[in-house]
Length: 166
Ligand code: HEC
Image (tube, rainbow, N blue to C red; front, side):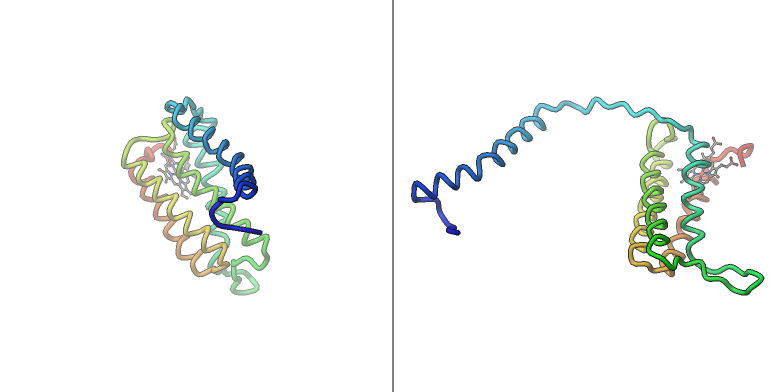
């Protein structure tokens, strides 16, 4: 195949026909971007904050915490680290859910202001580290970041959870 400046007519024609579709698509896209006003999307929360905690946060953090470290059983010490690809995938998936929950917590339906949003961002960044640890199948890192995750939960609960809901 010939490359370089499209000086010869045949080559120029080929050059143009191969560029035309991408160029048209790019222009359409640019045009759409330029004309797009503020996205008119309203997000409606399906669950309230307590349900978000009980139904999404709790089960997914349990997957993380149940996948690193050791527990004592009648048979002796048992290592909790996953031993299969599916097991590690489940840790990664739970961490990804928690990362996105950090975003959900900033929705107007859940957010209680700037400090709240900052803790929610801390949830997301910790969960991103957990995704990475699970991808590396590094149970020590899952354990360490799992501890960090626990601190994020506590930081928010100490500040925002009403005594009667504890
Ligand atoms: C950004 C703030 C925030 C973060 C982060 C957070 N929570 Fe919560 N959580 C709350 C609030 C507020 C409530 C009380 C909700 C209510 O009762 O209306 C709550 C309640 C709960 C409840 C219900 C408790 C009860 O007795 O009803 C559970 C379970 C829970 N959280 C688990 C977690 C876990 C696990 C994490 C971390 C992985 C976490 N939360 C992180 C704000 C947060």
